[in-house]
Amino acid sequence: MQTDNRPLSPHLQVYKPQLTMVMSISHRISGVVLSVGSLILVWWLSALAAGPDSFATANAVVGSFIGKVFMFLFTFALFYHLCNGIRHLAWDTGRGFDLDSVYKSGKLVLIAAAVLTVLVWVVGLSTGGA
Image (cartoon, rainbow, N blue to C red):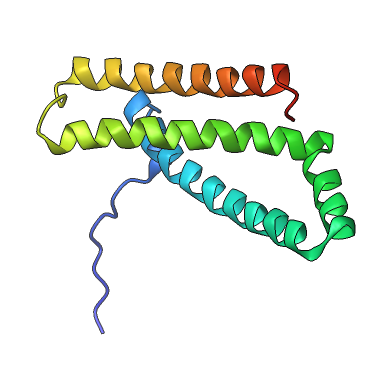
């Protein structure tokens, strides 16, 4: 068996991080966070169906400091994934591929996700949630 001495494709460490690369990786990471968050939501709903003691335990975990931090990050991941998904839908129409548009839409996605996350948490806290 002969071994080829061809060069391998460069890995991420070779490239300088750019907004497009970071947002692509972040989109995948936000999808994983949403999957884990969905499991927590299923656990919380199951605890609700299991009775008051189970629900109190689940609420204590989700309502803890670490639980609230995770829920905040989950909320950001949800809005980031949503906004970036809308951006990808626009790309599917063939629009927004020039470099200037890619960077503008990328920054818009980050700003929109941050604003929506803060808005949900501010409104939720002001109405007695969380």
